[in-house]
Image 1: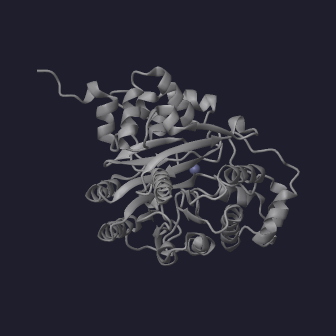
Image 2: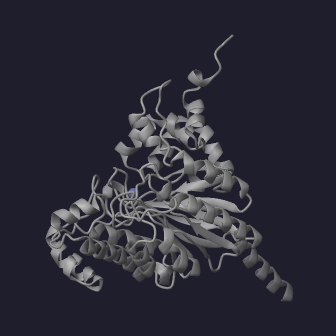
Image 3: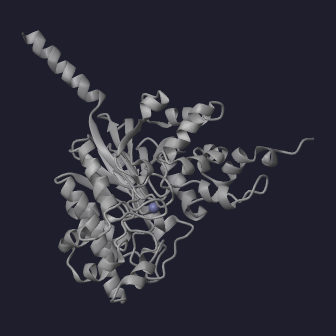
Length: 447
Ligand SMILES: [Zn+2]
């Protein structure tokens, strides 16, 4: 009997160590409260607690589709499906962009009070509404958000340090994040760290990479020290601290480092004169790559968004997983992912769920291990996928179909530029990308 009990305990132990926790990864929700413009004056006048009833009163009950951000029926459907698929996630990661594109323009068009004060209040209520939909679905679950480029009360790529918006965002999310660093740090620059309960030694360091973007400007902030460089100094200190405390770190951010492959392919021209476009300014990417290289033993991986595509980067020996968007605005299907990790916070596998043709029902799209025959989601498996796509056309087509969450046109467009993507997955700087993408033009001339 004793042996039997020991054997059962051992088996349970093995099962748990093989597959410790499951969490939800969500990105680019881009909620659009202007989708039914007739409701906007009511939303303006109301407290956010009244928003569910006002939004539910819309005569539009169908989902917003390709070319549009997320209306209330689509948001509700996506969150309901997350809950159906994973009622009790260990935690939720949200890699940014809560607000719809062109938020300010739409507000000016449809709102009655066009003042900055009223605008800030409306932006805040929109963030609070999205937070409430997620928190109602996942009460008592830690949710870790990060800022996207649209998450601002000053326009796209323009969040100001020490702004009212950052303080409001902190107030909305702090019960779900439950981190002292979030309470104290977030209002200064939109970054923080949080230790994940239930996953031994896992610390999330969420950084605001919007400051690093080639598109960032700060028209609403006060003049002061460079917010991006300040943040990098903080990151370096945080990584040192995490190392000393034997933490395993995941970085969470919206805009990843490395190449903007879409823009490079679309507007960069052809070899040998390709204008290779990175997402970040070199003045931030260079120190970032140095800092993260110094801490490669501490950083176990990163989670990002922004491209709306299901893809990845390999950076300094760690993966950057890019979670696809809920928004179908760029032509991909809405999707989210359920991620399995072991007790060492290593990613074993994930399953993508999508909404084909932005029309119900939701469906299980694929699981990483099944699709690629890989037992881990790590740099070795991603490098294997990246190199296999050169010769294996079936696998390549499949990869780009998943990248668009199964939307045929978006998949075909990305597939047509597959060589650019294959270089962009591994090459983070414009010059290394060029060496990969236009090899003949950058190699030494023959003697
Ligand atoms: Zn986005």
